[in-house]
Image (cartoon, rainbow, N blue to C red; front, side, top):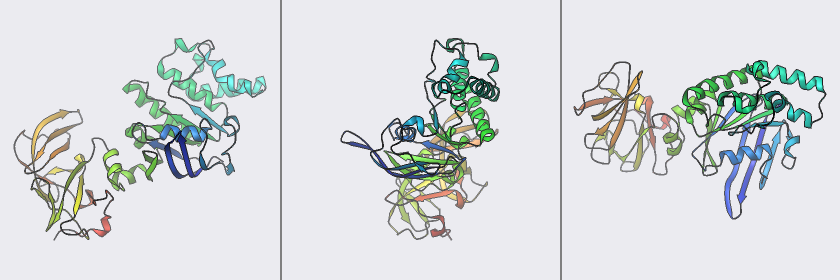
Length: 362
């Protein structure tokens, strides 16, 4: 039983409110990722769940129990920190056993739980070492093992991979996903890396300045962002966001180019933002033409794909992603195509204009 419920949760530091009435339901066994830019409040929210920060207003329940005023040790949670927080003078075994010893667990129980966690994390041969003798990835496994032995209702991860190099982060990401599959426990994971969020989460919570912008499955946020903030944050490379005015046959972009895209009930002459993901744009002939002409200026070679940076004829800068061996000549005009289902349109307030409210261009 590890469901987590936050009801109208608020937090202030002095006169500054940093969490603004957050409501959130995290189901038992769910892997929920809190994501957003630095300073958005995601780590503060995690620490409030852990009991390391007081809740200024609202209620928090874990497994159906109100724990708003309950001390951290009695909430049934275990937290894995960014900095590992291992005791340098203790062996791996003693680091993992420390919390159980404080709880006065029987020695046989401690032995069984530490050995079982070590087998799960494949660190049995490291139990006699001290943290200084371990790599970054091994230290993070020990920190996770220390959390596992307590059999928590909820695991909390605060940017646990940010101190690792790129290759090791990918490896540890896979191991955390496998750990969640094996344990079936509720996990709440904080990161600023939206690739981590997309690959790990059952549910993503996008935070901005202490407010929840959108909650949903990774593919839902990718395909149907509710607003401009989520549209610009989710996706790598970032979505092309082009401002313009609703005109006959589509959107007249600032600069004069006309994008022939569905606009539906948007008011003629109204200000809108057109969102086009780089991976959804194609040279004309590979999809529905949209009337935009792209002038490639620079290429980033990524191996399995390449990013083309340039600008639209009579319009702003644009990024296009090509897969495989496909290339385009630089500074040569390229007509673009995009499927209607891959078009995103936002109103003047930055809110999504629903697809069902947008008719196709005749």
